[in-house]
Figure 1 (cartoon, rainbow over the protein chains, first blue to last red):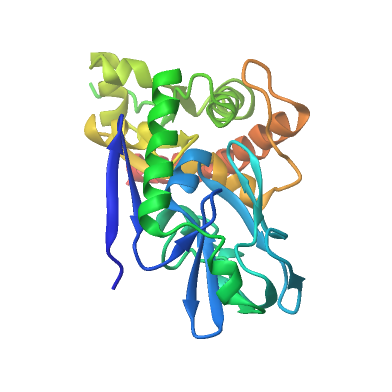
Figure 2: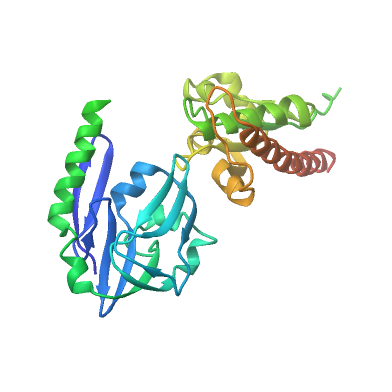
Length: 149
Length: 144
């Protein structure tokens, strides 16, 4: 079961799951053997608003580290998400076609985006942030945004 | 002497959503329902009147079914109608309508782009069908 680091900034509470790694842009990667599940952090989903459409690259697509792995269209913006892992897309979350709101409702669980068969996970994970580092970065960003309003 | 049966009305409450594209779509759709598509069978109630506890607004909710139109998941219109004792017959979320009509991407706030205007129109047309159903049910209730 996931445990979370949690902070409240202004009226928003953001969670960071402690059982996975993060790109600095807030895409998470959770290793399951040689498969790596990928999704969006709670902070990024809250920051960008309700998801209208979520489209990951289809199964079979080869992605390099930081290649686009999914596109999200939210109420506010169109987001191109960079893959936190190199490899071959094995699965795309089938639930997101009918229920893209899962990305908002359960970003660390049912709202996952894709599963990638990792090419060199040992190397990729060294380029990602651990939960504590991502938490600190996310918290700073959120606080700076509130101050800047 | 008996009072004449009043004409059934459906109350339409859009969210306020000031400064938000989807809020503008919700208000534009509401205007189209009550001014253009079903002027006889509908009544617009402003969310702000419910927040203020306005008696005539609360009374309209008490006497009629309501369609709410919300621009975001906070669903302020739906929540406020329920808190004011209203009967929500249909909750419409702009985002859900957009998911079914992706070709109408809304943009703009003070003035909607053509996609936003078309989205407001299809939303209003869908709501108008609900209005017809509700009015006919209310009529049935009055005669029975």
